Length: 363
Picture 1 (cartoon, helix red, strand yellow):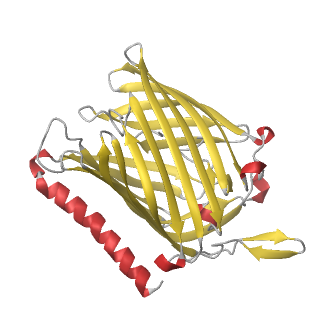
Picture 2: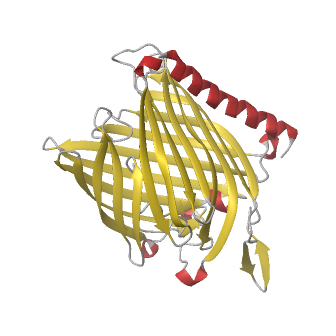
């Protein structure tokens, strides 16, 4: 990492930590804390345990119009000595005039790599392990009403990878971009429209986010590429309690993209039931639908379905190579006042299954 990059990295970390400290200190009497223990088991980790720590507060003087700020920290450790520490934040400042959101994460976890393709099979997978630091910072200012514009900075540093990732080209093998680790640093404009009633558990409103990021050696990136994202969500409440959510997501990349920053299907966010990264390539689109319904007390149920695909170029997308999922879920309200849920989902695809226990909704 160059000296210039280190300077950028330290400045952005300082902004994130400073914003959070100022926000919490500004109105400590409004601070609400919560802790939720968690345990899990996978083939890669064996038994894992940890906790979810969350806070809700007014970042500034309390006002009926000011949106509540929040932080979530996820800390996990496994019997294989694997570790993950993830921190998300949403800060609303000066009567919603400024919106700061992002994350600071560190993980040491193994995962399967299935290649860069839309048609991988289980036999293609390779187990890899690495350490990774990831920072995302979206600093926005209100343009009008619920529309915000600003700058999006993203940094990923993947290192200590134990397997070199290559792809076969003719009779030779070629190193995949970032196949032995990488440092990526990118910045660009972002636009967000947020009219959700509750970002962690929306029941009505709409959300739109679009961003264009440029990764270049001038700001510390080892690879030069561009990344465009469009995220559209709509929330409707029918018959007083039936919540119907829709999500259309597009991720487009061009240039020399590190393999773990490519668009990827799977995990608790995109087509639940697929292993995260089961299919990955330059470009992706996903369309998802979800219905949630409270049953009694803090208990609710959900059903969901989706379709999506990845491709090396836009012209390579084919209706014959789509992936789909469907499934059922359980919702347990863990904070009645803030109306936030613990999400337990069981996703089904044509060749795999997946169980997810996550704080907050998928979209």
